[in-house]
Each structure stands twice: as C-alpha cells, then as structure tokens.
Length: 375
Image (cartoon, rainbow, N blue to C red; front, side):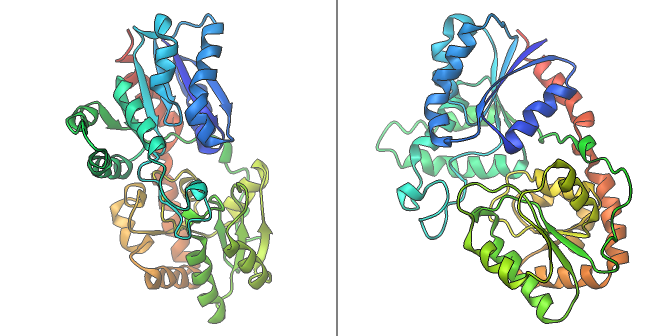
C-alpha cells in the first residue's frame, strides 16, 4: 500500500512520529513536509504549498494521512482531480480548541490576541475533521476533552451551528497512541550513579508556559531547603523566549545543576539513563512522548493525576507516581530522593511496561488500520 503522510509543521514530536512510522511500517510511506516554524501560517497557507508540491509529483497514494496542522479541506479542494477517490485521515497530535492559553495573555502562541483564543484555527481543525474519512487521536484524554469542548465552540456562532456534525465526527474517530522509536535510546552501558549516591532529577520537556515549570521549581526549592541532596539536569526544546521561571531557577539552583539547555541526541540519551527521577507539572499534555522516553530509560516518574498521564501509567502504580496537588508532588519527590533503591525498582518495571508504545509494537496496528481504508 502507498501512504502519503503530510506533516506541515515537521519538527519535534510531529517529525519523530512521522519518520518513526515511515521507518517501521510495512507499507510504502512517502512524507510531504514543511519546516516547523510560523505555525499559524502553516495552518493557513501550508495546504496551498503542499498541494502544489503534491501536484508537481506523480505519486499516487492509496491513502492520505495528515497531521492536525494541515487545513485538509483546502488541500483536498486544490488536488481534487487527483485525490477525490483517495481516503484521507487526520492524526490529532494536538488541537487549537482545547490547547491551554497563558494566564497573562502576553506569552505563548496566542499573545497577539492578548490571551484570547483565535477561533479560526480551531475551526480549521473542525472543518478538516469533517473532510476526513477517519480521525485519529493520540490519547483518550485528547479525544474526550476535544469532544467535550466542541458543542460550546459551535454554539458561540450566531446560527447554523451544525451541532449534528459532532456525532458524525465521533463515529469516525478512534484513539491510536503515538509510536516512539525507543531504539534510539537503547542503553549501551549503565550510566546511572555517575554522581555517587546523589539522585539526578531531569526536566526533558519543552521550556514553555503550558508545561508549568514554576511548580516544578517550587517543589525542588522545598526539598533543597530541607537539605535533601539531588542533582538537576534541564534539557528539552526551547522555542523563542523561555519562561522567566527557568532564568530564576538556573540562578537559584546553580549549585545543583549538571546541565542546562539543549542536549543533542547522544547527550540526551546519557542524561535520561543517568537520571533517577522525572517530573511533570504540565497544564497541557495530550500524549507525553518526552515523559515516556524518560520512563523507558528507567526514570521514576512523578506526574499529575490528570491529562493523559493516568493512561500512560499502569493503574497499579498510580498511587506511587501520580499526585493530586503540589503537596502530593513534594511528598513523592521527597520519597523518591530518600528511597532511591525502592524508586529504582518501580522505575525498572515501568520502563518495561511502556515498551508497548515502541514503534515495533504499534506500527503493525497502524498498518492494519490504514490498510482497511485502502481504495
């Protein structure tokens, strides 16, 4: 089967997902991509550019799969003489309807609207889903939160709200987790313990407001004040101006830091295998690739009991790893830092458990699902 995979914002998790599936699929997967910058213009104009490039090529796919950053309606309209009989689906890495907005209205992707959501981008998602033959969400949390918010979104329009379309969209939607290429993180040798008996805490998420770094650093400040020893590594992607919480923490926790900033693939792998604890304080997580990468490397996770995290962590470990509030975060962090052997045992078991998200396990599921849409 020939599959055209369209990724207009091709970077980070979108790129890793697309290229991972291409590498592991038994189908012929052709990528049609654009660089990961100017995300609003990608959602507006990316479809025009990608339609032109598709028409300039002679590739005839059996199925089209696009990410949520594509205006699928425009792409299909501009290529209709070539794609009218080709089934097309959309993979929802994220969406512009329930993506959280910054509290101050001056940071993040909606800063030009002073913190107000620009409904047009949510409508692009909605219309693209309507044009698709099938819709894939990366988690149950993502699926449910989107459809819970969709009725109010449509009701805010003055007339012809088309609320009856919601059931039709739900009927052609399913959850298909994002695959991860854990092979690139394969351990060559045991690196944990290089700093003696002092545990290493790692931050490997994006340096952005929706990941709520302030609460992460507050928890570290508490255990530091108590005299609990630890080391700290700050890695992960940065886009534009980073939240001020990082600048403050880098100064205040300088004595604990062993790394701060971008880590290339080799260093990133070394840091994850050296780390003992990973923490999320995120306000937003539709899936959680970076957290799963850390868990795969046998790093003990401390995560909020919300968003997608209860899906990622087997229920038997919820009480140990998932917290309800800031006090619960500090309590679990203190325990993990002072009981490293017990935390390491849990981390080892979780590392084995999350291997189910590896592309070697998920690619056949993708292949079978997409094959069912082959014309």
